[in-house]
Length: 358
Image 1: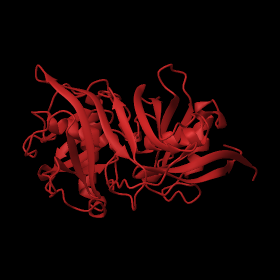
Image 2 (image 1 turned 45 degrees about the horizontal axis):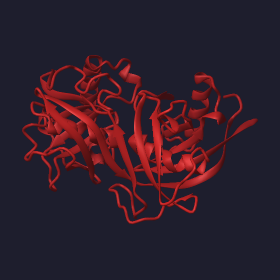
Image 3 (image 1 turned 135 degrees about the horizontal axis):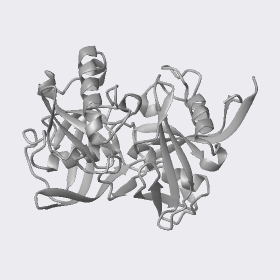
């Protein structure tokens, strides 16, 4: 078998990790590129013949290039390989992998670093939205070492500030894409929200669970997963999401009262497996629903939050803190920006090989 060699880097971004490519190292044709990406990550559930880890959080790809926009430095296309389905989804963004785009852009010499911090303006091609990354740099290199700890990742690293600009309705076109704060699906109340990531919120007690269960237990609950998927497919059309059966969105988020001083406790399915933590933009969307009166989170949120006040969204691995710059006008929530702190680390760089027939 002849093989094709492709330069790559593998970077842990936040609590995910993925393969990062320069767009110029991949085919221009979407069809040809997709086949290469599937081979690179792995096509079956185990992904034994690729670099993926058999989980959604390790089956991610970033494609980066110099930006064509005047108000951005780099363009970033996120690709989610849907584990075991042999398909990719480029509909959503990924806030965790985005954290690694800054270091990659510097390592790949797309951006010249400035000590002690480098601001990198990212155009997220999936949704045509912007994010500003502030990366720690020293002597022309990325500084990966630091004291910032994030839940779901062992140890500490240098902080990366991610400031999302005007991402409301990024995927679906509206912050609350069904035009309702609550919808009914098979007798269960849900809230659909898209502040950078389309998420469906469901109260744990409406599913006859506590919401404290570990991800492995929820993943083994076939009846629960079937119910979640039925609701997901039913509501997705109203969210302006088509062909959800082969997409990674909308995410399904089971919510219950916070246990450790946060705003809410979560268990998120992305979309079929319970996330060991929570996605960055998923947390932004959940926090947005929680500060808005009239959603399914209303009865679970026990304190109010002001604009630019840290909001802790609890998840199985700890919590993720979100800063929302928001205001209420005429009973409508308007979110101007959302900030989170992530970390990233370069894991490897070199050449990967895929079958030339791809």
